[in-house]
Length: 368
Image 1 (cartoon, one colour):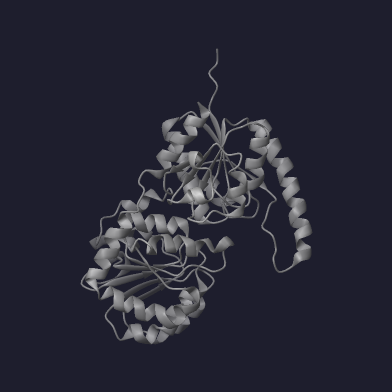
Image 2 (image 1 turned 60 degrees about the vertical axis):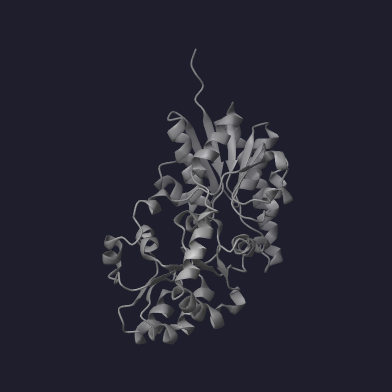
């Protein structure tokens, strides 16, 4: 008798913060069950349609998108596409016959997980944020397990379904030792000087970039080294503003190809408060100033940041205060070694290791 090959669908995406964990979970499942078949379901036109095949997995796209809050009339098409996506998701699941369907957040996860539940297939949700979104709260009613990265999530989900696993992160970040000479050489920076890493995600963060531009004169009076990742939309303005900053202490780039090197030499990080970024910072024990984006659903980045601030594991500066406060605070912190040491110790206490393996184990239990 032929043994049935285990099959899994992983659905979601939209940003690197959803896609990296999804691929990590897929890799962990393949490690545990090499013969397993894994299919991704994403949103057409979103970055998962390129990133997932590049990681070696097949993907099917749904014509699903978010509601347009500015142009209400466009939502007629959004709702039509959602209904069409639910039909397509049901067809994909009926054809592929997965044992378990995993949702990682993003537009495609809602129709896919709803279709799976309607067909009696067990579902698992990976909730990355400390404040659950509307979609995951809705999907959780039918989900068998909910893997979370923060405590106190019983505010949103049934306690008996919750498993604290943390968020899977990119494993290549941990292959370089702290203060690696190779990393300093890669960026052309001086190991004897303190270094601030400024990141705004793959697309950049407007307020963080505006804050650095406003504080360039103040930074030029210090010996602090800056790796400033602007994102592709802001690189021109940043380079123009940095022309007067002639010292080798400032490196301006739209994209950091070696984040493992950047984290290795960073004494302090300035970042948005996305779930994946925070998980990486916890595991790497990096002192951080978080500037949560106000332009996300349910203001979940502020909630993510507050979860760390309550445990004295990060400093939060509101987006609306950043232009006036960020650079001054960063200079003050990087020259306060006891403060950096305290933040580093406290943020490391919040790290959840082997998250992808733990989520894969929960998926396998559902299959059994």
